[in-house]
Picture 1 (cartoon, helix red, strand yellow):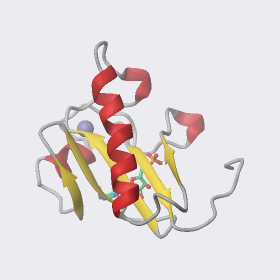
Picture 2 (cartoon, protein in one colour; picture 1 turned 180 degrees about the horizontal axis):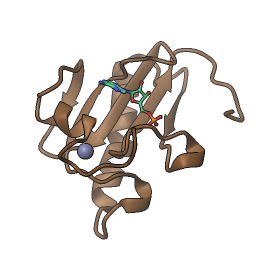
Picture 3 (spheres, helix red, strand yellow; picture 1 turned 180 degrees about the vertical axis):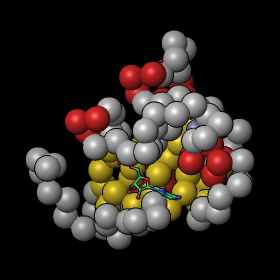
Length: 119
Ligand code: AMP
Ligand code: ZN
């Protein structure tokens, strides 16, 4: 998918419940749902409900929001049973990272040994 604004954005459509998703957490600011193509036994995406394309586009003043996402990643990892075995939080940003959906999203991956360095 190429960069788009909120109107045509896949993840904004999930936020608006126009497209189904397996939602695992929601509050006023955040939504978390199962990745449709899981790369590990645990693979959840966490997004802010407000649209911005990537970390590179994060607005001034988003420190608290970004911090809340990280702590939610920890909480979801614990709920999914990988808090002790370990997990990885991934934030792909821009073309070389392989970012495909241009609504910022944090991957939470776990449940198997994860290779390092990533490809
Ligand atoms: P990225 O490559 O970091 O942009 O990751 C995009 C992620 O979104 C991929 O892991 C996809 O499997 C996932 N994805 C794409 N469409 C959906 C969808 N409709 N519901 C849940 N996850 C999705
Ligand atoms: Zn969006």
